Each structure stands twice: as structure tokens, then as C-alpha cells.
Image (spheres, rainbow, N blue to C red):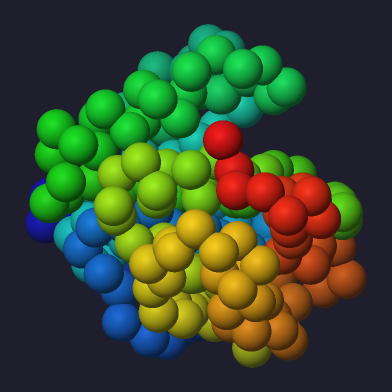
Length: 194
């Protein structure tokens, strides 16, 4: 939509945020460090500015009236924290049916506060769909939204996550000091995400 692109570009320019890196047209976009709700807003604006309509994972508690219809219109998918309701399987089926324009944005740490481990859904989605993981970041002090390349997951969780950690090293988020180190529980256990 030309109006949406114009709107997004105008807001980003007015807010003096800049974009760094190349933005792929498809993939599972992991945004980190997730330190503020502005991470979501900035990422969606950057993708809209490029003519990309992303799906975003948003906690179910935010889908109340009038936010629910607005969030769905923006491409948001409700998630239930702690529930094992087949979300990865549903998203995998959607990605397989439209692999050329499937863009999913998520915060792998699942919270705006520091945490010991990221959630492994992004990794399982990448394995199930064959889509790349796009490593995106927000750095508040430099007012930059960046894209640090893509990762084709190999199944070697520790080696893959070492690459992820290298991209996010030094990235501070909108609120520096609140981010988490990229680490999956499966690295500690020596197993692949299931």
C-alpha cells in the first residue's frame, strides 16, 4: 500500500531513526534486544516503509476491544504465554502455503526484561519451514534499526546460536541494560529444539 509506505517513511524520518543493512522479503525475523514496546512499533514501521506486510506475535492479553481488531489488521497473531497450543505448527503450515511472502516478526526472548533463555519457537519454525532467520536489532543510543543478515539453521544449536550472539553483541535496544543474552535452553541440554 503506497499510503502505508509513505506514512511509515515519514514517521521514521521525523523521529530520526535510520535503517542499516539489507531487509529480506521473506523469513522469520527475530528482533532483539527486546527492551520496550517501541521495538515492535519501529520494526513494523521499517517493514512497512519497504512495502512488507509482516505477521507479528503479540500476547493474547492485548487483544481486547478496540485493540484486538486493530492488532489483527496490522498482522498480529495472538499467543498464549506458557501454553503449548500448536502455534509453531500453525505458523509452519502458513509459511509452507506462502513461502515467498511469509514474514513473521517475533521477540525470541519473549519479555522486555532480562531473561536467562530465549524461546526456541523461531528456531523450530526455521527448521520446519526451511525459511531463514533474519537477525534484526534496535539500538536506541544510535537510533538505528538494523538487519544483521540471515541464518540458515543447521541443527547444531550451539554453533547457530554463536552466530546469533555475534550479531547482537553490543546492541542495546531502546532501553539499554534490559536486554538478554541470546541463549536457548537446548544449548545447555545439548539437544535440538522440538
